[in-house]
Image 1: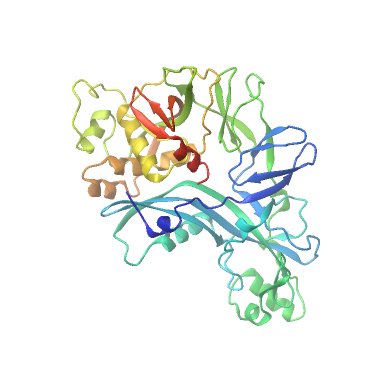
Image 2: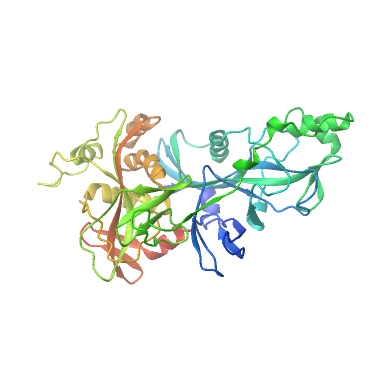
Length: 442
């Protein structure tokens, strides 16, 4: 896989957004990163899972949070890795940008580096000011962002997938007064002449009404219901046995070591995740999580390992893969550099290890689950494209093909430590520790 110019220029990970929030129990300040799923207070030691429907709503802190003319402009925050299938193979790039979520000619299209340079806050019902509702959908913003990465001289693109994405809404505080003032620094953002010259958008219309000497500056239809703002927290107690769930601050899935169950925050409640493990767990092992997905792909006959071997023109190992058991696609449940992600996914899928129905955790350290189940399902197309030979005709059939998921299980795979590497001897498979740490900051 060849990196694009975008990834070459940004080979290091982009800085995560920093969020300052108050502990819901004692009110103490807590520093969070955008990838954090657990809030741990350094004062009262409470541990809470950050939950809530939809993407997180964040805001840049205004200079005067009580200004009566204050309102907030939504911007989509899109961060992730783009895997693109082209006529000559797979390429990857890194995307990290903000995209204006309302159609208004009077506002800048992006926030630049400001979200990374400042400490953000969660938007809550108690936040003073008015919040404009997004009129540009997330799908439209993602499509526009992907188009911006393409070069005019780029090879023929067949399809692309956004892997390990982080989506949120960042609100820019502004004041409609003699133009548009940037409420963060109190400086003009848009002049009055430019505001009146803008042809579309709620701010442009409001500016014309204010200039005419009357009317409300913003229509209520353009604003968000304040009750939909805020962030919810869940106690990290197992819903089945009441024991404390374990997991690291950026893990999407928490595990109960007592009843050996796994849970993810689904909207405002805990949802159970199917959990299994591979045999061979020792006291010195470390567990890496994988998504084991049984799915059918529209237009491709991939039901057994033999079908996959033939698709990839691989040599058939005598006595291996001739069983009529179903084919499962394996995806790392943690973020990695795309090249290593696809290598590990292909190795696990071809090896076809058989997990135990009962998870054997043995209180061992489990690497955090940072790649969501739905993202792993979306990556199935790219995993198949990576393994297919010749790849181009298969890529054309994969583009737009529907994936029907029959089963998705989180499997803990034991790896032994050998210096800077983690090794699974039975498969065999080697994962570098530095890759794992780097992936947590993607």
